[in-house]
Structures are given as C-alpha cells and as structure tokens.
Amino acid sequence: MKRKEVILATRNEGKLKEFQRLFQLVNIDLFSLKGFAELPEIVEDGLTFEENALKKALTVATFTQRIAIADDSGLMVDYLGGEPGVISARYAGTNASDEENNRKLLDKLKGAPDHLRNARFTCVLAIATPEGKKEVVIGECSGIITHEPKGQYGFGYDPIFFYPEYGKTFAEIEPEIKDRVCHRRKAVEKLLLILPHYIG
Picture 1 (cartoon, one colour):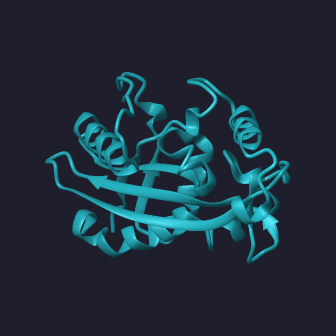
Picture 2 (cartoon, one colour):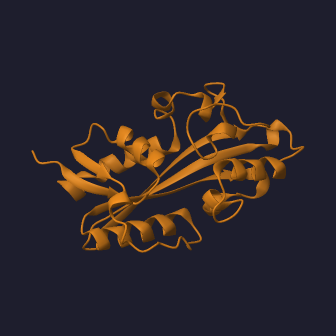
C-alpha cells in the first residue's frame, strides 16, 4: 500500500521528530515545511490554540496541496492567569530562545510556593485537506513548574515542567518515555481516531 504524504506545519526539527515517533505505526510519511522555503510566513495571530492550529493547517494544505497537520501547543500556568498560553514560543520576545522563555516564567513565579505553581501543557492538533475539510482535537498534561531547570532532553519548557507521576521534569525523562504521557501523545491518540477519514 502506498504511504500517504502528510505535511506537519512546522520547521522545528525537534517537533518533527517527536511527531514522527508518535505516528510511527501509521501508514504515512510525515514531512516538515523545510522543503517549502517559498511558503510565506504564517502569522499566528489567533486568540486561542484552536484558531492558530486551524489557520496553519488550512494555509499549509492549500499551499502544498497535501493533507496538513498543524499543532499549536503551549504552557498554561494557573497562578499567572493562563500565561504564557498562545504566546508560549515567544513569551520573552519574538525571537526568544527556550532558555529566555523559561527564565522569564521562573522570574514571574519567583517566591510562589509549589502549591501555586500548577500548570498544564495543552496541544491542539488541526488536520486539513486542500479542499478545506478540517477538524481539531485537544490533549492536555498537568504538572508543576519547578524553581530551576533540570534535565537534558526535550525542548521548550520541558526543563521546568515537573511531572509528578514520574517525579522528574519532562527534560529528565527519556523522549520515548515522555511520549507515552505528554499532551501531544494524548492529542495524537484522538487524531488517529479520525485520521482514516482523511487518508483512507
């Protein structure tokens, strides 16, 4: 059976590898936007994860004429009223590094006790076809923001996201283990249920 080509709406190779692991049992070849240099930048100006994910998926599907999957993921901290939320990737500025984003968040939580540092990762996945058919699923994972970064794995806020069930930050957990419990895994599991309606 010929494998379907699906485009993941990202140029982040770390994110691509994570999704490739999550989709490894599905009969698709998942590609990033790396081979589509001419694709114009997609401004993520939505007020919600859902709006941003749908905008990216529909834009990429139309441009590439392939089925596209887009995610908009972020960290939401209760104590900060849901920050950083939809601006998680650019919390400390448009071109901020992961370390700068983490440091800003830790600075804003300075002095906050552990019981007020509850947070959750949210992943919204949107799938779209070139014809405009679309759908959205959501996955979440709860944890606690640490006081200092720990761990060498992962990316983004993983070094400061403590996962109580494992007693470690996401960055201290090997990627294959993290994949079993993370917000993206939960969203992907939901997406796999509807994927046959898109790829046959």
